Amino acid sequence: MPDRTDISPALSSWGSPDASLDRLVRCVDTYRRYCRSNSLLSFQLLLVVAARSPINPRQIAKLLNVTEAGVSVGLDNLGAGSTSYGRTLGPPPDLISKVDHPASARMKLAALTPRGSQLVAEMRAALAAGR
Image 1: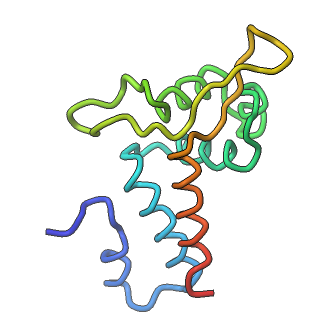
Image 2: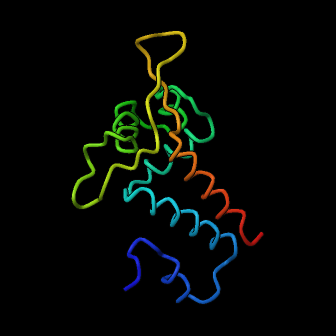
Image 3: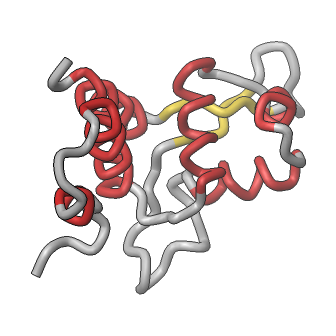
């Protein structure tokens, strides 16, 4: 039985997909191997943190035009201590951590964990494949 998170077989039934779409699908499939969340916001958060790590969650909210509360929940869901993961989604993804701000003990910044960096490298490789 095929992995339910891999959408490549479904696209192959459409015929020959555009090469850039195929690379994007491989990138998303790579993300889904690390993180079972179906949330587009989680995917966007990972991309923003990867591009600007470490970054203030308030800046992320402005970039994505979402609430700070939504960013906070999304970052928690991508962290090691995620409580939304359980029997149905498996272990927490441990992709993003909250680190101390160098200028303020009260503020936290979002940064990629080593596992998050590994995922981003694999996603970049999936996008680059076949160019």
